[in-house]
Length: 278
Image (cartoon, rainbow, N blue to C red):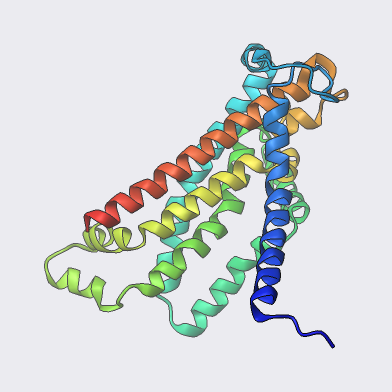
């Protein structure tokens, strides 16, 4: 049997690792690259690249229905993120203050909505809103606010899961020490606890915003007439290539992806600069 030198074996292993890593990256980022290229493709069908153009971006801003759906998508994502971060952080602090057994039970209850399929959560919320509509027959229940409430509902557990690990890292006596030094409970929370769990809060906010802006199933089941986020708008188009809907959708997705990347880069640079400052 032929012996393979260790150096050759190591090189083969490294080639295999980098090849596998490259395949994974291609699998993850190919859809983003494809959408990015299609947003600049002059072809109206996208079947071939016929030239470079920016007209899909200008048409996107001129499409009233699309811009309305984008406004609803982004506004709901922002409001849902703010509300879920505030409530989720407070709930996480409350859960962390419980004894070990109760904390485990509360974490288990928090994980159930995360593990649930979107269709289950959507049906539950839809039936809940239908009961409210039945109780108040003269009130239009389904619409913007039911969608917003639904997004807050499914974002809160992710915020809790992001904040709890940071709370576990805090010294249990830190809060009591702040009270002994003259802080009010709210002051100790604002000056001691919140800064200590800031990274978890930001992570929870990013996850909540991403979950909200990406949602379709729950949004579709809890919205009302005339209220469409981007995913519902795209779903209701019978012919994706009519009025260049797919190209305009690609332009929107490209802008969202670029904005997300810039936010992440800015956040990492801020953390690095702050770390160097220390």
